[in-house]
Length: 408
Image 1 (cartoon, rainbow, N blue to C red):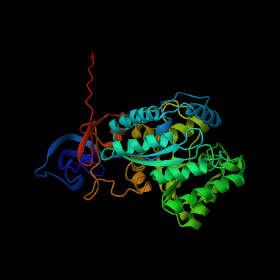
Image 2 (image 1 turned 90 degrees about the vertical axis):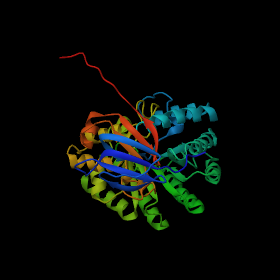
Image 3 (image 1 turned 120 degrees about the vertical axis):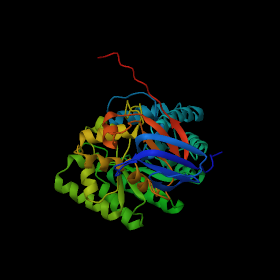
Image 4 (image 1 turned 60 degrees about the horizontal axis):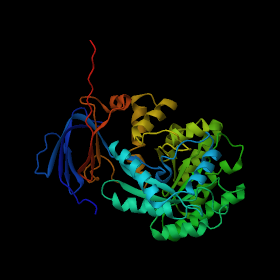
C-alpha cells in the first residue's frame, strides 16, 4: 500500500536562486510555503543544516529490465544481440530483483520520478512488463514509475510483437515506445513509427521513441527525427512525443542540425539525451545547447546501467549532469543551471508531470545535498551524497558520510 500524505517542516535549506537558507512547509504531501523562519505544527521536522536543496531528481529513460547484465563489445548491434540472448533466460523474479536493486540506488541518489522502457517481444513476451508493473505498484508514493511498452527489436521485424504491444497497453503500460531504426529498411521504419502513433491514439498514451542512434547519417534508418516530427504534427501529439538518443545530429552540419531542431520544436517533440550510452556506443551525443536554444524540451538520462549498452553507471542523475557538462559547453554557472533543469523540473514536464519544483502546490519531492554552506554548483562539482531525500513530504532516504584524514 502506498504511504499516505504527510506533513513536514524542512528547515534551513538553500534553494537555487536564493542567497540565504529558507524553510519549506509541507501539508498533505505538497509544498505549502517556502520562506524564512516558518513555524507550523508538523508530523516531522527535519533540519537541512544550511545545505542546498533541489526538487526530486528525474530519470526519464532508464531500462530497468535490462540492468546489471554485464558488458558487451562496445557496438549497438552487439548490445542488441547480447541482450536478445540474455532475454531468453529472463524470469519475473529475476527482472523484478534487478530492477528493484537499481531503483533503490536511484532513490538513494534522490530520484523520485522514473520512466522505464521495457522490452516487449516474442522472446521475453510480457515477463519484464509484468514485473515492472508490479514494481510500479509496490513503489507507488515513493518513486513514481512510468512504464513504456518498448519494441527494441522492431515490430514487423519480430512477428507477434504488435499483438504483445496491444496486450501490454491493455495491462497498464503508461506509454507506447518505439525504435525507429529497428526494421529492415527505411520504409519499414517509417511504418513502425506510424504504427506506434496508431497505438498511442487507440490507448490515449504518450509516445517515446528511440531514434537516430548512429554516429552519422550514412544509414537512412537513423535519419528519421524529422519524419517523427511530421507524424507528431499530423496526429496532434505535440507535447506528448519524446525521442531518445538522436546522436546522428552530432554528425551533421550546423545548418542541418538547425533545421532538425526547428522541426522538432515546431512539432512539440522532446529529446532525451543519454550521455553515458551515447558517448560509449557512438562517441558523441546530441547537442543539448542547440536543442534548448531552438526551444526543444530536453532532458538528460542514464539510459542503461552496467549492461552491454552501458557497462558502468551509478544511477545518479547528478553524475549524468556532470558528464554532460564535461562533454558539452556547460562550464559556467548559468550552463550548470540549464543542465540541472534537465534532470528536475524540465525533465518532469517532458514526462507530463507538472508541479515538480520548489513552489507552493508542487509535490513535496526534495533532495538535500550534503554540502553545508555551499551552493548547488559546488555540490555538483564535488559529487556530494544526498543527505536527505523526501518523497511526497515523507523522508525516504538518508545518507550520512564520515571522512577521517590523517594529514597535516
